[in-house]
Image (cartoon, rainbow, N blue to C red):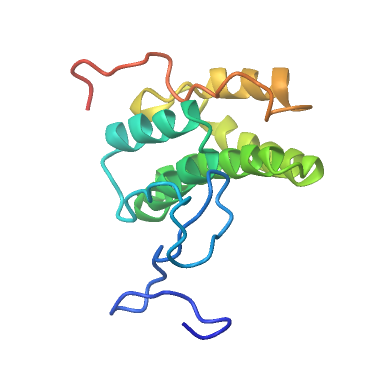
Length: 160
């Protein structure tokens, strides 16, 4: 791989060929310390939320961001800001995990503002009010906070 080049698939889309640590920082090619990569293709909303929550619960906010970003880019226009907001919140948590408090605060704030319009009728069981409340409680130190909850319930028995 040449310096500055990105890993791409045959269609020219960037791909995750390089290993990363739990906070998303790239590691040298072949480094065995890398975390398991996440799917790059969008998942159905319920699966997206379940995987992103699992990643958040295990301290992998950057990976949760990648899952949510795939959903954002594939979402219908009416939901793009919602998924983008969730992805931005996860990037904000990632910045906090890396010690960048200023960047974390900006991204968390932007993400929450994108979610607010969905508070009255949140799709897919997303707990928009809960996410906004989590931000209000933990904006000063999101890296030390309990993991963000994306939905009001831990499982979705028959929801789709």
